[in-house]
Every structure is written in structure tokens, then in C-alpha cells.
Length: 323
Image 1 (spheres, rainbow, N blue to C red):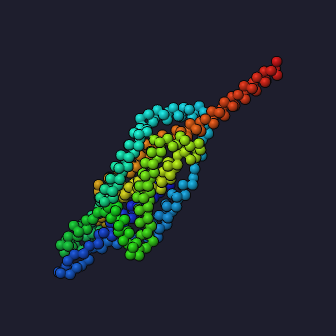
Image 2 (cartoon, rainbow, N blue to C red):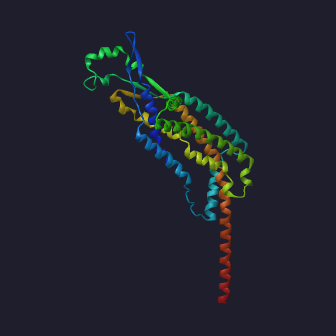
Image 3 (cartoon, rainbow, N blue to C red):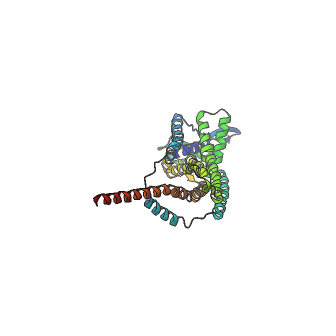
């Protein structure tokens, strides 16, 4: 899942472009509408290439498997004991199912609320735009301030408002970058994250019902967790939140241009929703590998017993030869 962490920037770019576009405002000047401020932001070819690289590199990692290190039975038994002590506090059975259902309900509420709440805000300061640092002459300062541009330029954005605006642009014949940005947020940020939570709930019910223990083939024993593992790599809610957080932390570089970025509580609510997602994945996936490790340890123990028996036979035959 490391590959998806190359893409926090693309989600931040989309939100930032939406903020800049929302700066466009009209004022009433002597009875006539006049455009007081225009925000122009476009996603160009660089965004297309970078987004395509991030998506396909993340999908490509689904076909990679990390080879298991060879371990003997004693090492695996020691690992199993430490693993059991580590999981002694983890819930299981009905408690696990109940806790996962509570986390799913909390995730749904937090996600729906966080999508609607503003997660970032942008404000414009006119002082850096006057001479000698800016292009506006000081003689026009009184007239510019009469337009109250600092007040009308204050804007914020929620993730859902950004998705709605992208969908509107796509419906009106927007460019390919609008389609890519819409797909990133709808499919990778929201859909895959929600689908992964559904699969984790199914995995908790599978664990409680004992379906895993009935399977004889270890490759089919944890089907729900296998799907969840793939969805965890593809879901990018965490990546998008990190990208927005980094943009807020680095937003001070725009202050000399008169632009200021501000934190909004929607980002924290979405972070709490993703924390529920991570905790659910941890609770459901932790008990599962133990069964597969025990299944893998049994052939190793049989192999060690066979090797020890062969050594005893060789030693006995050798002692008979010497006598």
C-alpha cells in the first residue's frame, strides 16, 4: 500500500483549484453588475500525467506478493506465543462483531457529516497587492477598498461541494482532467473506502461464524480479508486527507501573494471517519493470520520430525557398522 502514498498532491490540487475558482464574484456598480474578482484555475497536462501514473502504479501493486521468509517450527511457535499475548486484549466472537458494527455506524455518520462540512478555507488580503509589492497603485487604494474585496473573497470548500462542482463541469462537457478528478474522489476516495468497510463487517461475521475454520485450503480461508486487503490499497481517503493537511501546513508560502489558507473542522471529522476505518481493519485482520500461521506450522513440524527420525536412523546404522 506504499505506492498510493505518492498521490496526496493530486487530491490537494483539485480542492485548491476549486477554491480559486470560487473566488469569482460580481458586485453592483451603479446599478450594473460588474465582475469584481475572477478566480481562474485549470488542471493541465501535468495533472493528467501525474494522476495516471499514481492510479496505475497503485493498481499494479495488487499483483505483487511479498515472499515469505523461511522459518522453522520453533520460530513459528515463538511467534505464535507472542502473537497470542499481543492479541489477548482484542475482542473476538460476538464482541468483535458488535464493536465492528458500532465502528461502521460511527464511520457512516462521520463520513456523511465530514463530506458536507468545509475542510479548507481561502481568504484574500489586499495589502500585498498595492505598490510597491503589488501591481495596484496606492492612489486607487480607497476605491478598491470601497468594493470590500476582502469580505466577498472569503470562501471555503467541502469535499462534497468540490465533487458536485466537478460533476457539473463534466455534465456540461468538461475536459478529461475534470473526469479524472471526479473519478479520483468518487471512486478511490469515497467508494472504495465505503466498500472496504462493508467487506470488513462481512469479515467479522465470517470470523464469528467459524467459516474460516471449515476451509481446508488456506488460499480460500480468508476470502473477505483478501478482498479487504486489495480495497485497503485502493481506498485513498487517508491519502486525500494527508494531502489537504500538507497544503494547509505549506499554505504560508502564498501569504506574500495575499492568499491565506485556513483549517476547517470538516477535515478533522473526515480524519475521525478514517480512524474508524483503520481501527476496524486492525480488529478484523489481526486474528485472521494466526490460523494460517498454525496451518503453515504443522507441515514445518512434520518436516522437522521426519528429519529427526532420519538422523536417528542414520546414527543407529552408523553405530552398527562401527561395531
